[in-house]
Length: 493
Ligand code: NAD
Image 1: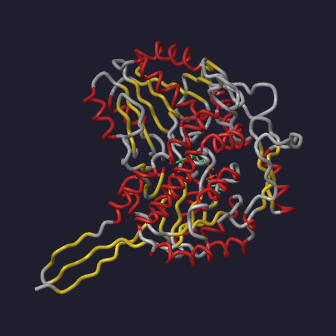
Image 2: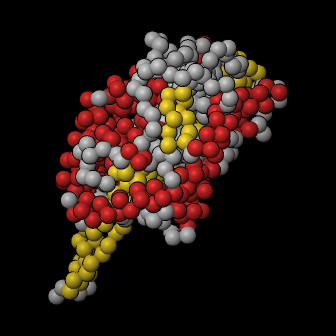
Image 3: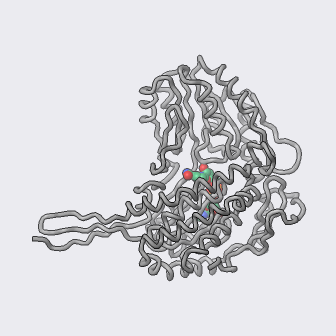
């Protein structure tokens, strides 16, 4: 079945169809004006500023109806059993893999990333569905305990209806972090994709609904206001990926009925480089993971601390490598960075860079908005940053590499790495692996890489420590959070 037209965009040109002229106002102005008058918002191409489509927001009544439909469908979906649910979800994943190019082009059109990276995104997440279902089987396996005069069976039950709310930076990947565990464990879902990538989210839901029973996955459109209505509605759990500020608002709203939460939020990840490290490898990691997706990744390298004696050489290496990161349309051959997702996002980056420049930071590369259409921002490298700058503390989410020096002491490395409220990821490069291990243990982050970027083996949890999250996703333990344990005991001689 398909998603009800009630929740669909009013106008959906296919990729390449002619577009309306570029709007001359900023993104935030457009959003305010359109939403206040027509309850719609514009879906804009970040490479040109042109309108892709105008999207109808779900009304409060439609949000309630969506939840009611998902609730009505939930018992039968749970009764279907894991084997059948997994089979349907895997079929949907396989179909997505077959149509990866089509989805990748939509991602590039809506949020700008190079189309090959978008293909990688679809492959990466859709390709792990089988493994996720195996993990869910493990998560749901009953446990039998023997007690004094009793035998207890610990079962895992679904929670009911899960609200899944996602950001724009991985338009297929982020929904696929939450939808498979939410659905695989027997819940039904109301899914609201980001307003910046509405068609990617809608098409994903439509594709999945070619395999799933009716109303198991209901998709709605809207901005933050619709997300807030969904969270306040009659849902049992909220699975959310997005900013720290929105995560906090969701937690507050969910407290009224103690709804279950999994929140994956922002980061300000450090990279610590000691002088005895392989500087070339550390510079490769710094540049790739500060610039990929135009820096718009939750676990981007956002703060780099280099031991004094290696700082000059490291700076040269980083600038040399970052220079190769050509920006342009994600459809153009050889482009490594697409535009930023919105004028608003670019403005935030500009403000942080300007503040740093005013405070005496050295600009080694980039730093200026290029001429022409689209929300492009060049690969930028800043050095000699004073500690109090907002670029050292607030998430930047842009293609900016910030280099600071430290005295080479472990204590200082740990202090600097922990000097934000965030705790998503961290990276350490050193010639002394034991020192790397000691530092990794003391950095307050969910995931740490030593002499490599932080990405871990499949099956590891993805957790945000401190204000980078609440609960976590991925792994057998992560999937369990979409369920509630129930213990039933029987007498035993
Ligand atoms: P955002 O918080 O602005 O929006 C995320 C989603 O929440 C959108 O769908 C939005 O419409 C919705 N929303 C906004 N206000 C809401 C409210 N009051 N109630 C309910 N829903 C609401 O974030 P964004 O700009 O879309 O995404 C970027 C952020 O996501 C960054 O901070 C990034 O670090 C984070 N992120 C984290 C991870 C992770 O795994 N930890 C992964 C990707 C992105």
